[in-house]
Amino acid sequence: MKIDFLQKITSLDDKVIKEGDKEITLADVCVSALMMSTPDDSDKKNLWYTLAKKIKSSKEVNLTVEEIVEVKKAIQNHHAVLIVGRSFELIDCK
Image (cartoon, rainbow, N blue to C red; front, side):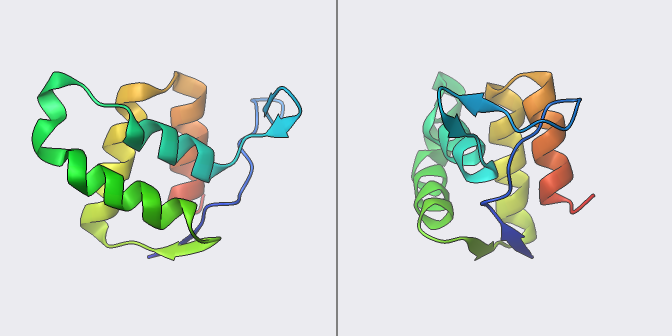
């Protein structure tokens, strides 16, 4: 599935969320989640690193269903509810 990772993350009021002056993108959310790890994730670290590099390197990335599951799992484990919800909407094209 091809995903545009340069899509902006928005608040519930549909305003683009910023960190300082930088608008937060889906790539920012995914890469930060994939690069965080917990003791339970030791067998996934190389996969998550590879996915983070893939997402960071291109505007649109073609991911397999299995890769999307891993990205979503990482986002869900490492981000707040709003970021999870908005990210999932963008990944699922809703």
